[in-house]
Length: 467
Image (tube, rainbow, N blue to C red; front, side, top):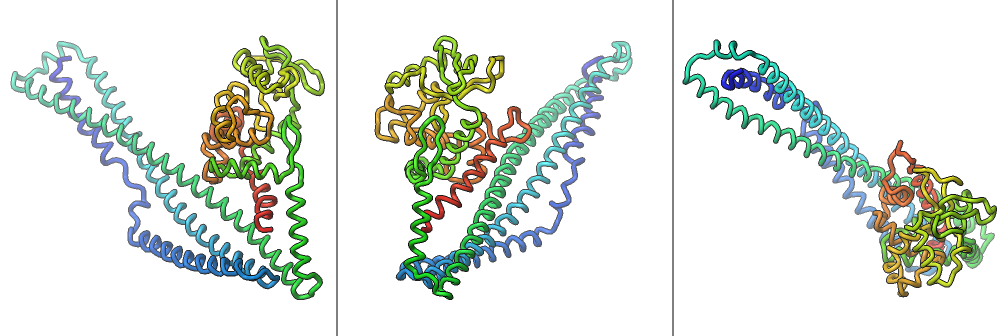
């Protein structure tokens, strides 16, 4: 078919098709709602939040003044009252934040739906245009010649074709722009959802703390009322509780257990330098120690093949480590630390027989770094501890904690938000952020770490600070 006739027909089709992209997708109903009502609600929330923040500041001042007073039962009761009042106001503030986030999440979800419909319509328009073009190409040369009119019509059609090409290019640009906007909106939506999850987790934590403070306040009021105990006896009870927490053994994988107080000091030192919360570092080490109890540990017996045996059972394992990627650095690490590589425990692989996709073991010490990864981190570990890189020891608890903090910081755990820590734990376990349905599954590991983090923070670290 001749060019001028084909594109004359295409031009008519294109005008109708391209209009679909611009006018066929009506805005979602929520965007047509009164902006005045939305703005009024937002203003009210901001006003409420400002009032709450003023009240929080007032209770913080009372709490500071109470702490400066002479210790006494009544003073402790007043301090707890201030803590409870401040915490309850904090919960109100966070609930306002969640309402604001929920509103934003809904709007962004609807906006994404609109953008996706625009993309779908744009693709439909292009598809129809290409199909019609193919149909026109089936016309015979005779049909084309017979349809010719005159020379001026031919040049007019050429001008129309140039215009159509430009409009077609504009349509492609429009679709790309809409796709880019959709991607941006989805990223912003994910951030808002993470923020809402973090705020919800924070509220739950504060609520648990309020319950504990109210129970302690009730206990102190009973002591004050009955005078069964002196304030000195109350202090003694607190000191005994603190001593019990500090002396409790903190289990470590493939290393001797250490007092919790020592483990906490190591973790707090790492927190100060990396920004990774001490409770989270302790939770990762605890999780790895629990896995050690469930899976046992292995000993490497052959550097060339990576084969080994169960430490306690003597059961043969094929390719405990990947050779030579990890076996060679493992030999180097143990030799420079004065250890016997055949007697240095490492994690076992997830099966006795090797098969493609099974994976390897070879994790060393409390933090379960594989040898090749430890070699990548040894300079940073040594720098943080003030020792040479070659003295960094994966079986040394202090060194292992430092390595965990550095690695977790790299994985995004600095700052202590719930979603950041949970995703860092999943990345530590599997190399990817937490995602339901992922194979292999990593969310159970992340969820377990966060439960342990909460327990350590609220039942061991916070009580020590309060006591």
